[in-house]
Length: 312
Image 1 (cartoon, rainbow, N blue to C red):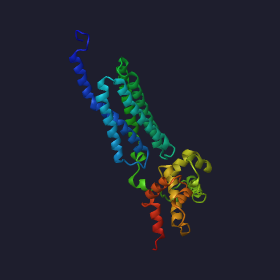
Image 2: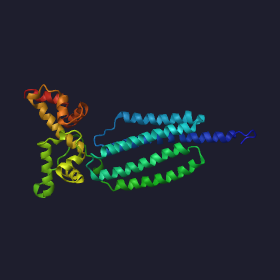
Image 3: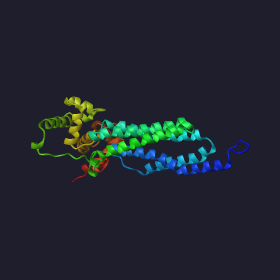
Image 4: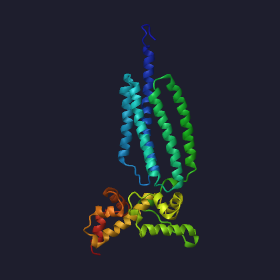
């Protein structure tokens, strides 16, 4: 302190230097929450593809954090600056959790279903608690103690996640390239198949082919298991291990696309609008139908109809 009671200029300058060293690290650590969000999408959504605008989101969040530290925090408004940055962090954590919960019920890979709960919940809990601590105790003496505790908890969680990931086969987490376009139907000699599972497989395929149960609105794997009078976990294993699907929605959409292909190739339905065919097949709107159809056939529904209508 100087004689007039104001902070020593040398001490203040030292604090500014320390803050300057931390600015890039703070900005990058804030941007990492976008990486975490993208990681959960890549891990649990087999159809996810990294796009250029994902990098743009990361750049905007990182740049905002840097500007926030440079202009807001160094102007003396530390608490608002910390609050704004950590609200962004909480927002992306919420997006990651929503993504995980939203796709959890359709996931047919049992080990991936288990590991997603652990990884996302643990990481989201740690990140959420850290953000809330930063908002609540930033700039106080308690804040330093909270940071030490949080760092220790984070180290334990990272170690636990690393151990969990090493115990899981990579094929359980990420699909092979061919699987993203079209599911692989596993073929086994009938003699090698379990009789009970084969009977269930036949019953399932009758439901899909004869009753076209996939056309029902909001059909779930639980409802399908009830129709077959088996536990839900057994139906998941059946569709995953016997038929080669990793996602229940992809399984449904594959049957829906086959029905739509037959309708589009039918000369009697040449004047039926594509949206009508999509709705009749079980899709709720035209956009998802077009994307799913092109992923399976490599062409749009209109192109497919035109191809089938042209003379051989």
